[in-house]
Amino acid sequence: MLTAFFGDTHGQLDYMFSLVRKIESGLGKAVDLDVQVGDFGAWRRAEDMDASSRKWCERHDVPLETGMGDFPAYYRGEKKASHPVLFIRGNHEDQAWLLELEKPYRELPGATVEVVPNFFFLPDGHIVEWKDSGIRFAG
Image (cartoon, rainbow, N blue to C red; front, side, top):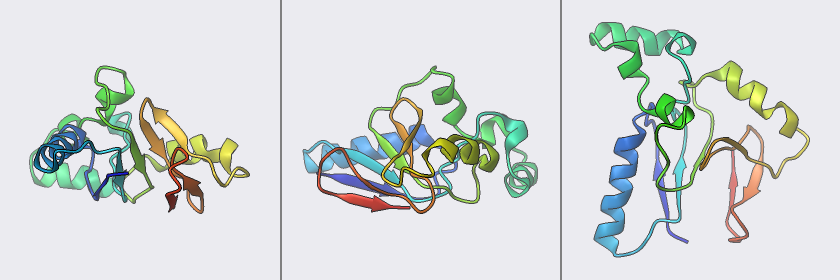
């Protein structure tokens, strides 16, 4: 299983997927899974962004909608993930939303939460085997 690891994408998911395609082209093999190790940028709405992300946008004169990246378009179904993505919580996410999503899974330690098609959130303290591959991830 070929896995690509990324960190701190801050919602720039189109760019992440373009890098995956470059990896695939260079290796001549398909990437089976993208793992994002925090600060994925899971924001549905600009008003849910954390204070430091908002300040970054202000300092760099970037509109909030641009600063939050591509995730909202994937959330609304306007874009589709080219590869499955497994992500863990970082400090630049919609914390309240992720906490709400993981509530039903707190007693199911081997579960992920598919927040949008092909984007799988690994709740804190969970260990999951990825699709019977024998490879386990812990968050």
